[in-house]
Amino acid sequence: MLEIPPPAALAPAESVRERKRRETRRRIAEVGQRLFLAKGYDGTTLDEIAAAAGISRRSFFSYFKSKDDVMVFWMETGSASLIADLLKTSPDVPPLDAVRDLMVKHIASNTTEQMTAIDNLMLSSESLLARKQAYYAEQERMLFSALCEVWRQPERRGALRMVAMVSIGAMKIALQAWREQTGKRKPAAQFLRDAFDSLKSAL
Image 1 (cartoon, rainbow, N blue to C red):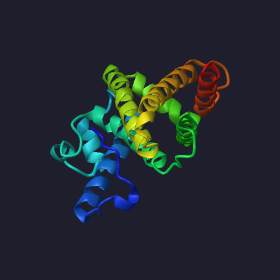
Image 2 (image 1 turned 180 degrees about the vertical axis):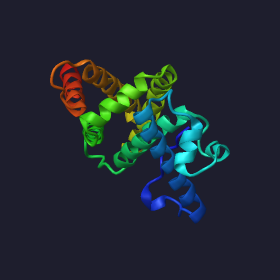
Image 3 (image 1 turned 90 degrees about the vertical axis):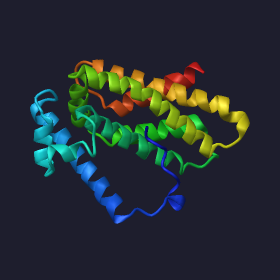
């Protein structure tokens, strides 16, 4: 389970060994994603990923348990980055607005071509789709925990839980609408902003 990173000022110093392990894990994930996009998810083997990353098949399992975990790595990385940014947010900002702005910012950092390629890759595997759906619940948990770190009043916890729930819901609806659009494709960030606008109007 991915833990919410501590504030930068309190984060423990990273040892050389930890840094090398982190860098190797990221290299494996980058190589894996590149091969998945080039050869397809099912057409890529663990041996090919290990060889391209410059490690043995046995070493691969020291960093990832399966091919699925290589793809999940990128979901976890994106979520951790968003959570880290949220923890820097001023408590004077309305929570829903803060989450909306950060989600839109993060999704806008990917081009339509990149998102389409990754989305098609996720759709190509039933196991990846199942992992993605399960991870939405984990994202909601992490988002709620971060919201409670920024807006610390105990009486707001119920409302903050709802913010986390509806934010993940808005993202799911936006990505589905983005996926199903026809004609000239609009960026996913626009769908996400529209989903939050519809949410605020309904409320």
